[in-house]
Length: 272
Image (cartoon, rainbow, N blue to C red; front, side):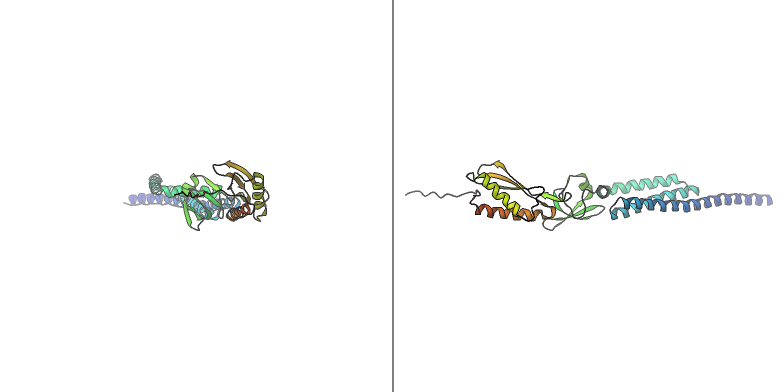
């Protein structure tokens, strides 16, 4: 009986020592791993800060990296304690796959948002054209980008489709060319018309000198000689220049006696 108790005690002692060493090792791995993770996260934040990453992107990626590294650390600690982690990892992978399939669209938008924030094809305040919409960029989030349309309507575009489509940024260069076309009567003097149109452009305070504005004959249409009028302005002045130059051109052509063709109705009187 005493020998049995002695063997049982020795077995318990061996088991306690074995698990005690595993527990100490797991605690040590947790402490060291947590310290390494904190250092890695600080390094990641420093790199993103120096790279001028968007603040929302910095916070999201930091949290994502933190959770990912902690999950790996937990799996390592459980393995040290003798817990079978193969099945645990398989369950985690299956759950991740199921969630990924369920949120496929959202993940696509998330990936698109990350690409937009990293490569920065546009920023808040820029005027862009994308997905058939034109507007000023109001807000860039992880999943969507919000635009303010020309009529002050809010436009929300998913980042997935936005990042995979064509994007025209009207603001990034700082200046824009205003494309206008005006038609005059065939009887009008071309040189005089060009002079009148150019004077309108030079007189407008928002039309810049470099690049220089241009006026050229663009088409000999059915009922008019069309002139391509191309002034340049600051990006934010585009619509002001567009509307004011159009109005000023009409007034200047009228003052110069240059006719703008328009459909005429001719009444025919039949004699009785």
